[in-house]
Length: 337
Ligand SMILES: Nc1nc2c(c(=O)[nH]1)N[C@H]1C(S)=C(S)[C@@H](COP(=O)(O)O)O[C@H]1N2
Ligand SMILES: [Mo]
Image (tube, rainbow, N blue to C red):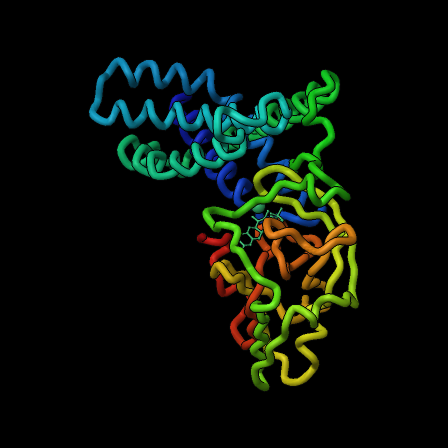
């Protein structure tokens, strides 16, 4: 039989790995077909809480042994607890910012800092699975654990609704509605550290590098919109807004000459994302939102609108578009700057 300590430690390791994977998955999810990833993330987070009483007992014994690395273990515990508490604070809407940081920033920051410490912890305090662990009993216990964590998740969601906390009407991604159909009330957000550039309309050019050569467009080419879409900008920071965007479909600039496999959309700032060419007729190069030209913060003169994709794909201040044969997934899954 599996010793209770090892059982708890292995379960916690598994649940931590699932929480990280589904956390990254939640950031990648923009279409409702992927909502289960976000549910799984919530269930994993509550799974950590379910295991906490057992882990506390193990940790108490560990602390008494005063082994080297004790402070790193305690730091790991603090980070994991902070990530879970900040996750609950955000998702319930009870506390959306903590000093200068948002609850979401604390949630993600604590989890990312915890990763190297967790790797160290697993190496320094190994709890190795054994073939005999794969028993009927372990299977039943795992099932019970999943059941309890899922019930805790459903109960927590119910409680948020019953108490009327703001978290009750979030989008399926977990984001809160902020400034729909009021572009000026929509937050100006950068992925990491881009600054809003000052772009003069008459100096700005868009260069489109196609397989058959380069073309350059000036601002005048985008003052008359030939495409419009109602789409929801959903930032991984935890807010979303629906707006009516106007501009030109990317496919209009690509033509149907030798198209290539992917299209890179780049910002004046260097920020960039790559898309499959087959998406081009659903990607809008927007110059207007809510009936007025984009503000500097929201991407003037031209930004991308990518319905069904999270905010980090919505490249602002576009100055270059390149089509080539690189596969679209040949890029970091999330922007690095
Ligand atoms: N050039 C550039 N475009 C960008 C970003 C950025 O950091 N640089 N951030 C993205 C992210 S994370 C989001 S959520 C949206 C935010 O758009 P908004 O500021 O108009 O609300 O822009 C996207 N486009
Ligand atoms: Mo974002």
